[in-house]
Image (cartoon, rainbow, N blue to C red; front, side):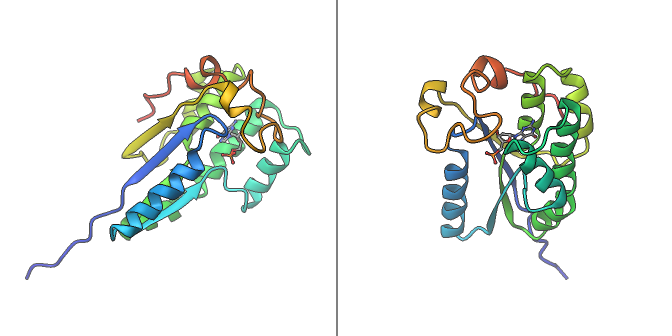
Length: 173
Ligand code: DGP
């Protein structure tokens, strides 16, 4: 007897600087996939709905300070706590469109001066994406976009291509 084994969903990640249009493109992609009959779901990191995510939110909104290592590990923990659920969704045949992932984790912390190998270490073992799309946009364009400047990292100098985006983080898996 031949039993049909469902395909697992694809893990697709969109990365890029703040306000580069990732969330909008992710949501468009989910819409297009659903319209073509492929189950798809949007998730984003940081997930601010968990206890760990609430700590990250208080850091990003400048209500609480953490040193660079601590906030790095909190962002990583936020991805680890989502891993089982992500696996389940993928095994159910649903494609996951992920708005930021480990690449943001490594790039932001390395841009602050932490050793890149140290930054990568706690990310090892998380799910490997099937495809990573990196959106580029110039700092002058992002600084004009709505809401820019509200949160901790929304500073043009920090968001420049030479800073965050040039970190060599393609060897995680
Ligand atoms: P977003 O919700 O995508 O706007 O992200 C919030 C902010 O957090 C944004 O400035 C990017 C930053 N960020 C996202 N992921 C990480 C991460 O893993 N580590 C660090 N340090 N910052 C991150």
